[in-house]
Length: 223
Ligand code: CA
Image (cartoon, protein in one colour):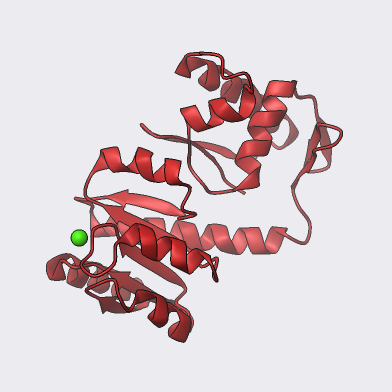
């Protein structure tokens, strides 16, 4: 079903508001108030995307997200009432495509929904001719046909981000990818590696901004 979004939210006021804004943006929506029937609804109607509240009666958003991921890669945007939760959710590696914190502006949700869908579309288009190519055996990478001169740390950083485009990685998660000996380094170390990596990517493809910072959370790679 094209442009159909499933909203799972137990607060009726919020669900109605989200539904109205998404419909204005040209989506059709339906709403489930509790968690039990979400998975079967997703199987039946194959929404283009699910907006999934974390705290739900019946079955919580974490469990639902895991269950959906067992059979589908459809975009999932998790909604949580606490910004501190986002770090924990990232750590659980649920495979959600984005996280949004309450209170949110419905306009922002619509913009993020569109961004996630656009990203999915771009990934599909680029699967045939990947812009960024990584050779794990040789530890080399190329962007838009140009070989990148990366240090070992930069290569591991890029590999980690590129393994799951669109996923937000916290600095801690990136740190554990690039330093296998668990040495203690400060957050700013990641920032400085990212800065150098960005510069090398920009040299190869000036029009692409590939690595995005997510304020207060970490980094993600956009394709
Ligand atoms: Ca709730």
